[in-house]
Image: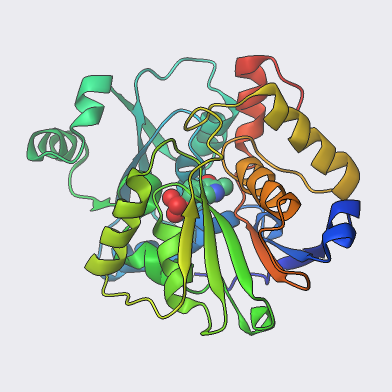
Length: 302
Ligand SMILES: *Cc1c(COP(=O)(O)O)cnc(C)c1O
């Protein structure tokens, strides 16, 4: 694949950070090439290379109607010249929402799966049905997390990040966090903020690390208090925070992942969780494409 442009860094300049003497630098993965940005790009890179290496002419993956993963897969596949099939949970209603319209425009073939079949999407039965419809394909799981994704995510951190002490990032499946945890330096620690409700994610990440033979030599912690009701759930407080960050810090955030990351991070800073002088690198993992659909669906003006 084409080489990626290096992400841009943004140092946040806000009264709270002065008061607490904490440095926050944002690594803007959202500002890379428009078609290849965010953590999903890193997660897809080696998967697409592997699909081609194995001689596949198409790949297939799963996602909801607003999925960043579906969107990124469509973009990256188009760039790499491989056909992409997007299996969408529930119905695909026309006109398409902005996420699916982009995906189709990049040539992704969209195919709906009933919610009950979608639940069993990894079963032999459902995969067999999809193979009878589409023929052979390279399979990427929902959310994109597998060994190749973790390998890709381990390239998010670079030499320029060596002086940072804390790496903060949002967590969905934990695939990105697993890659970061395996590639952070000995003096760094990793702090994930779960976008989903519940403590299960800690176990899941431990399982991910074990099954990919990543043995931790640094502290890795996941905050589970900033889910705002669960995946893609939000409150007026979160929406207000996102708007304020845009105005005061010129930092665009999405309500599903990065908004929750920064809300949680600032809450911890406020509570003196980090010693004075701490250098925090916050990963802006992308996801801004989803805002358009979010606004339409909930009548918001983000
Ligand atoms: C998918 C996604 C995440 C979560 O990544 P995981 O590897 O599933 O933990 C975080 N931020 C954004 C913007 C995403 O799209």
